[in-house]
Image (tube, rainbow, N blue to C red; front, side):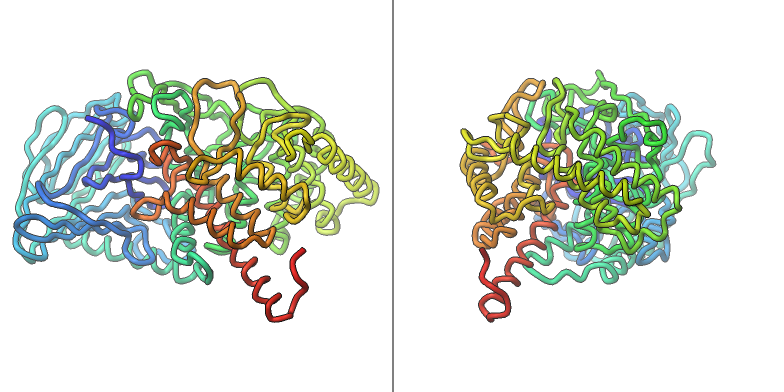
Length: 615
């Protein structure tokens, strides 16, 4: 059976883990109890890696998230009746606002109700723990099904009698108008006490409480008013759903090895937290959530880092609990989504040198200046050390923001972010307690960096800033130059760069590639939604609001039916590619929408005679 499109899936989360459920009612991805735990259902990466189907036998469906929540509601229209299906991962009972997910019990809830006529349903429960390696033994127990195998125990609360076979449980049942059935799935380690069955009343009550929990979080946090308001608010909820509540870490995506090109080798595990994302994430949280979430994320990052104490490079990524060793391995028994092999667990990029992380971290700290008083003095000294290290190492080559797996280069973006590190440290010099001699050095090196970027990053032949020093390759990461304040977007060199990227680094849909040069890997990749949002953002900073809106609209055309974005878009088919949903894409959406809002306000003030005309 051909794997469904990535865009077919909806996300459910309890802020500890997440699952993906298809339009056809199949849970094809669930890791438990953490985002980075081995999968219990993994059919997205292999037909035999487990799934849980719950759907009508016949009919058509329409789905949506209930207003201001990530609780999924699906309306089923069948030849004999109409039914409603509601699904969620349970949040802690009574947890509200900032405590969303605090006491999450680790339970998947699925409830179907017939509202007209009668509807026949089918269910097929086939757990396959440890990425499909374990075929558990299933047996009937009071109130449902118990599955045990390897280190895992699963209990499915089900009022429907099920038949057993092929290490699974299957059944059909019919509901008439006014009738409903609820299911609850709990996961435990083998050595833990067996979970008890949940009653129908409990399932209904927990679903309603989960709705209220999401709405309380949205009501407290989401106050953005501007273009694409609903998309921005929804993206804020997606970022919250990708947050690991115990630490505040945000995963780049809840999946591994969904490919950047169908059948290719560019398949990576994104269930970790990247320092690279820090400053952009905080900007997005500021707009679409609130400073409290931003602070928790920053506090996690600074707590996870220890290498600076030993004079080593700053590690670029961490496990969601703060783990450092993210060693990469291949799962040879899984064929991958549509044959995209290998399937990887772990991420070898954790050992790479990426000098941009110094700027990402100090950019994040700069955004949270009013909160830095909460930092321990050791934390302040750490930020000073980050700036010192940027000053020491900016001239060295690295792997760059895109984690290239070939020889290190002098990436422009890495130099740019070292400049950001020093620029932000200088602005916070009093808060950081930096002594005059150190401040003088930061200022001197910042100017050296600026001169080097302008001399070696600008390519006269290309007529644009390029990927690395003295390179001819265009790269979308240079769009960050005006976004971080290195050059105004109205600077002639930046305008030329925007034009070069818009005409030479886009597909026929107007979506932006990261780059088109060699990177040490075989095969090609799709266009990057984040980079497209960067282009819209840069246009907004240049006060080209029309082009900003047009570019933004081209990107959001590729949101799926429940408002989720992947990392990439396949240039020919327009199909979503890459791990899903992708935090960076939603971050780019939020930040670009905010930039366009600000540009429109500047235009309004200019028309009203309140500010000078844009340059």
